[in-house]
Length: 170
Image (cartoon, rainbow, N blue to C red; front, side, top):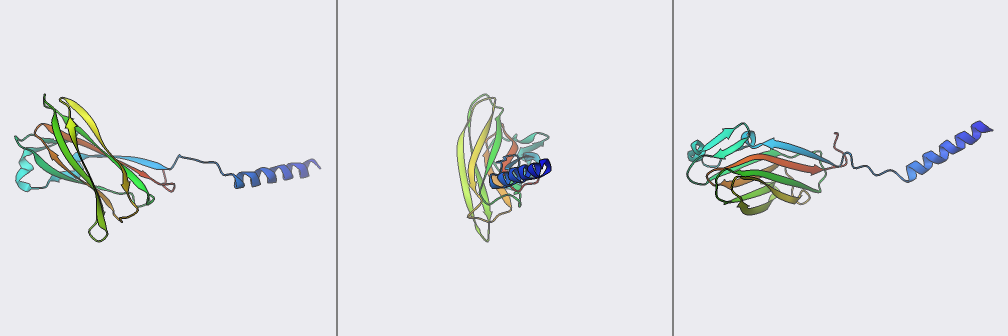
């Protein structure tokens, strides 16, 4: 009798658990940090000598602005929803500067979505330039591509990618 009651109770708990699964956010997103030193290069080889590829970032040591391009692989296991990219920029000058960057997602065959953004970086400061809700639905792509025009004295150190998925194996 007790055994039958325990079996019935265990069965009821099991059915209730199956009917009302617990929500878990443990594997919903993954942060990836990529150093700009390995991911970026000058878009014009003539400007390569003005860039310093330091252990913590790509620094413009020239007297004029230099355009750089960076490529970060996307996680192909992530859901086709949205993702986020952040760029960490440091201004080593004692005056504010304007930095313009564009994050692109897409491919030649499927088209691209471009997310341009410009803004001021205060003197002697590191800022995070945030690109939220990058569309992964309308384009099939395998990389996040970044272009920035770095003024003299500015460094791009890190590219952070946040991709969302319930199926990521963390």
